[in-house]
Image 1: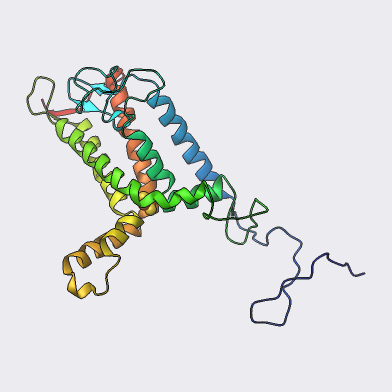
Image 2 (image 1 turned 90 degrees about the vertical axis):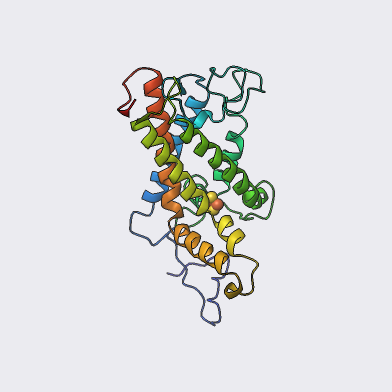
Length: 274
Ligand code: FES
């Protein structure tokens, strides 16, 4: 018995033969759903943790060792604990305003528009498509040609903001070598803060926009040897952009959790000097 389909099967490009009509949603038999699933779990858990921490308004500053968590840097509301505000307190201390309201929106937009994260959440949260050779979860597809996804093109500008914020985080890590009484100090917290900053720089510099800013719009690399070397370095980092995106989520959460634990006196800092 033969069945009649409503629309004729599409033809293969450059061929007179029609495509085979396949009733199955996908012919993939591997665990293609695992990557989107793990992304949902990982990103979902991180966003939940970060949201709770940002609106906790507590346990973000260890005065004894000058440790400030990156989730509260720079601390700019009038609610900020004395000593934790390295750039002034010019916003009201309302609960709804994050203490790092100056930087968090830009960091969020930087990550949200990141080429890697786009792929991650388009696939895992929007199923658009969830994996190669698996049909899209939506009937129509307009890509990034319309509002709001058209805004993804602003990523290059958020990169500049993220670079400035990385400078601020670097400054925090340097200040953390000065203990509360003004002397030099060095502990496990310093290693964690510096490690986080190094990873943040690696992630920021490995950005696709950064690579274009450094090596784009040039006709001859031979006439720009310094830019060529920088572009080569950034290109090598860029191949690890996905890994760095996940590593920095981990180092950010670890740094914040460690400082929260110290501030809440759950455990002491491991000190090597002072
Ligand atoms: Fe990921 Fe720019 S592409 S941060």
